[in-house]
Length: 604
Image (cartoon, rainbow, N blue to C red; front, side, top):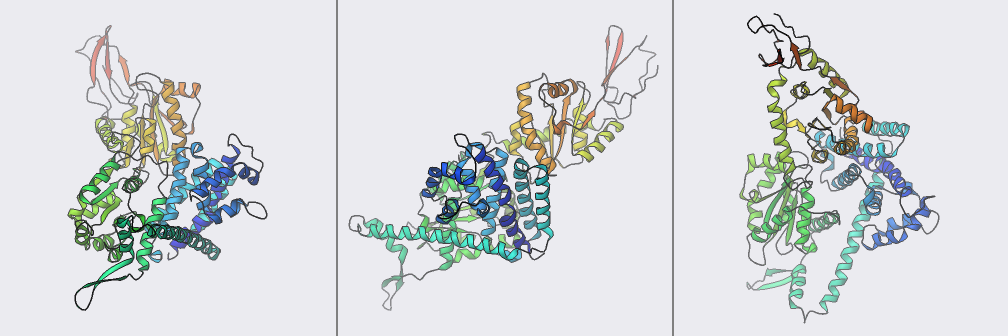
């Protein structure tokens, strides 16, 4: 399919604005301190806030004119993705739920990534599917929070049609797409013009600030040898690609939210830059390692006009210490998956990049390489180099104790602990559970205490790789889930293993709302265990929930067998139950515990 890039553009231009517009109106109607009758009246009440956004260059003049036209009234249908996302995130930051904020950030990130793609005609099927699935998930999440059931179904059809139709409105979509790109470039040029005006004022003070004068002259001149071997300076010719790399860097730095709270790894990045002049920043899909790198770069106070962003090896030949102080190397080994050809080309210039970080005082370039941890690991298998050794790994910022690694360890230990007992569950029980799990994608294994619920859960999970499973021990663990790699969630005794905890149950219920969305979208399967009495209490005291709707009931695990003498007693257990279990006397009654189904026979 040669039109992959164009289909993604049509998705962003034609489909994404629809739920964003409805979501903006929904938030506006719920905005405390204002009254909503129509868009114009609401924007009139928020005029001061919009003016502040314009002053901070969050919105451009042309976008401001769409909100407050000189003639006529504001038309929300003319607002594109960029304007809608800016208004939602800047005007309603406290009203956004985490899943809504995540979905909006996904749409913005993909839109920016598509705009910066260097080769739009040669997109791989894997990259296309990744982009499309992320857009699909993000827009449908917003649709579920905004649309009615009927509108949501119609919106679902629009997405499906956009993936397979012959794109009759492609021309209009591309026109809008490139018009927005041109407006952004024009805004960047205006900022550059403002900077040039500032430089003119500084030149008037050249006698009082010779160091600043030297820096300015170095930016606009280059030394060349004359016929007699002496040095002459002349004005540099314009390198259009270098200008694009510089503009790309400035655009990227604007993507960093003002409210971003960087984790402790930001300090490690800055330390390595000061000591070594280069660092590799990496992390997992959900760790926000890229934003952390931007925060560290911002804290280093680099001159943005002498900073560039490169994506491929061919960009390097346009970078010279005479023109550049800092290089941000973004996803050099592949965007969503490892790209061997791209990595090999980058490896060919590793020595040159390393050399520029060890130059003299006036010819040293600071370098930050940002890449996904899995992609970096794959690259080092084939193209290891010293430049890849100075690494800062950024972990999920929702916890200070490396939650991503801890969750993996806890899950593996959990599966190993119950692995043996899971193989001894009665076959009829596991068949019932497996059939219901296959049909419903989410089940609750319930029953009395110590009936083998957890063993059934682990038995169901045995058809997955351990790396595809994640054990949630707290409701907040859901934020750490890597939806790209994890496809099974296990929640063991969510209502309390030892005693019922209503306060904690309510936290789980809040998380279940988000969990239900990803189950409905087919992104996740879920196995939950809960003691029957506690599950009934949850439904009575809190409420039923769709995630808890489909259940598999387990029978009692321990049975009583009355006997007269031990010598004349022989127990015959199900071959899948633990061998002999354990026996004890209680008031003349012999008890035998095992995981087998109640159909287990005993003979005297």
